[in-house]
Length: 141
Picture 1 (cartoon, rainbow, N blue to C red):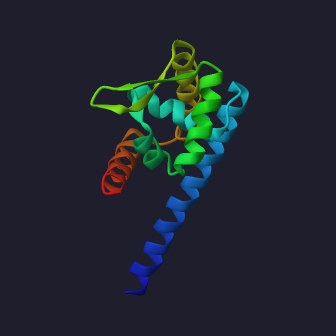
Picture 2: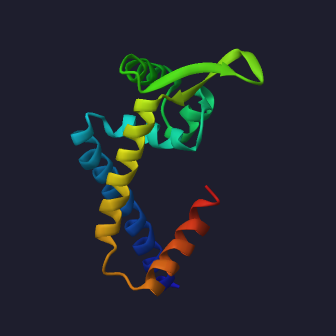
């Protein structure tokens, strides 16, 4: 039983270390684009399409007031726009503008390129195994 506990601690430690590395990569890849890591994350999330503030707050794990400030700054830079919510006329959604879309694609490409660099030595089998395991873990989150 102690072996399982040690393996569990090892897995938890590896996942925590992964989180820190990914946060560092966001910082490293967003700075040259003139973005904070949080702004880059927001723009990349919006690549999937417009989202409401409540959804964005949940996805980004930030308070709504902090999100509002971030959206305000990005809106002043013409990277995002507030648009009417098609199902609730009292609410709005956040969408990428054309310059925002271009910058979001640049941020996503820079981030995924760094991940590709870090995982370049993994065999195709190891890549599939890692991808399957992470998908399984995070589909429950």
